[in-house]
Length: 256
Image (cartoon, rainbow, N blue to C red; front, side):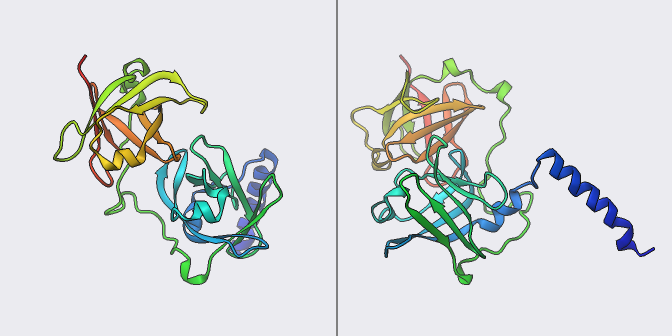
């Protein structure tokens, strides 16, 4: 019997079990294939913006980047801060709270459509020259910042997080002071954060943290515009940005 004939019944059985269980194939390959530069356009208008779907972890999904002018050209992007693949074939843009901003469904090769509750239709597409080459990710990609694994059982307790912190940079100490309060905000699972007077760091003043959350040993600061920075505990009372990208950022708990 031909080898292909022998394995066909097995493949058919596997497909049947998958359909009956309601399970769908895993999505990571879709994530890699969908990463890269895309154009978002509002149907029936000339408004268009180029966005980049990154592979780096960000917020509750993966990194989403676009020029600041996109928020004026396409107001629907104002709160978008990350993206994810909720199931094979779909692309969802989400806000800092993880809520859907736009969900795109396939409408042809490298073309997706998304509709808002207000009835607007957005087109997501890319040209051949924008396609990202899909290669199997290496176990430890060279030159790509790695997220540090954390054992939640050894992470500081939630009660140890609120308080006042001194912000350090690579060569400068005490450039800003930051208060993380135990007061809940309107954003689910987030608490109030505030830069205190006298902050000398322009980057932090522009970021302007207004909220924070803590889960799984990771402390996440949320800016007024919805961007996020995640930190992990280095030792008691001290946190550093993770992954270590851009300028060094360390929080040290201020002594009473």
